[in-house]
Length: 85
Image 1 (tube, rainbow, N blue to C red):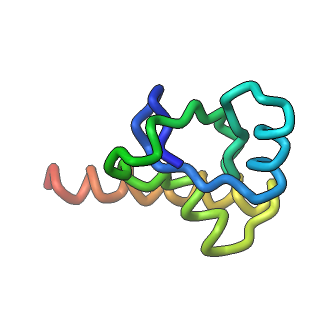
Image 2 (cartoon, rainbow, N blue to C red; image 1 turned 60 degrees about the horizontal axis):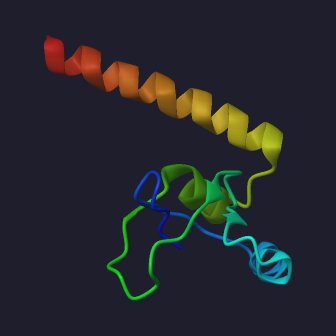
């Protein structure tokens, strides 16, 4: 589901999607925890949310996801250093 706020495509579980529909509020909680305000469902998809993609791919719980985020941030810093050399 692509969010109008950040233009990323977020993964929303069936349970969270159903809860959002029952409440009728028009927003849904994504797998990454982002509150998603969906754009029109006929609109093109946005870029996939990296956090949702990571959690879906690894089935990560909160602690594992935090570790993976830190590792990914360290990897980004290493790539930046390599490019500068």
